[in-house]
Image 1 (cartoon, rainbow, N blue to C red):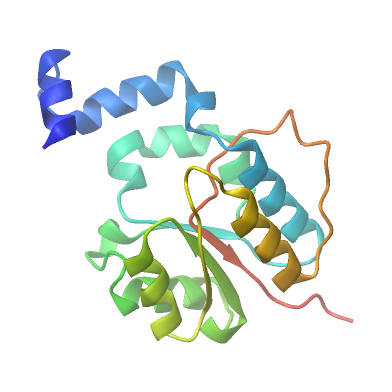
Image 2 (tube, rainbow, N blue to C red; image 1 turned 90 degrees about the vertical axis):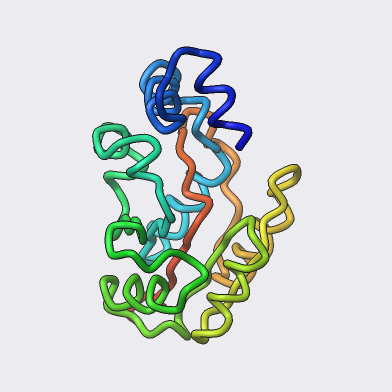
Length: 172
């Protein structure tokens, strides 16, 4: 695999260890300010927000996520490898919904992998495919689905909440 070869060339036994060192040295490189802004705006509008990842903890380490304010602010951070049910297996989506205390039909899920988007749809979630080269259309669609306004002053935020945006209608 590509990352195994790169890690070996750089003197690492495991590509995850290499990524962990990169994450520790340059955490902002693992961030997407627009994703962080979307997560914050959704929370501010009364929605629950979570990240569902397949191996984020294994790759970057729990310490990385614990150290980043955008992840500490989440209602849930779920690493599906911890319970051996990675996306697109239905259990990863259902378990995340259960952790949040919402029905899957009340969730807007974002991912850059078509199979993972299909997996979310299979359990009743509204799912949005994110193009990694141009994330704005997916983020704009999510804002429309959640009926939240775009906020423009988020240049100071960093994070990679690209995996999951749970929604629950704010209490009236």
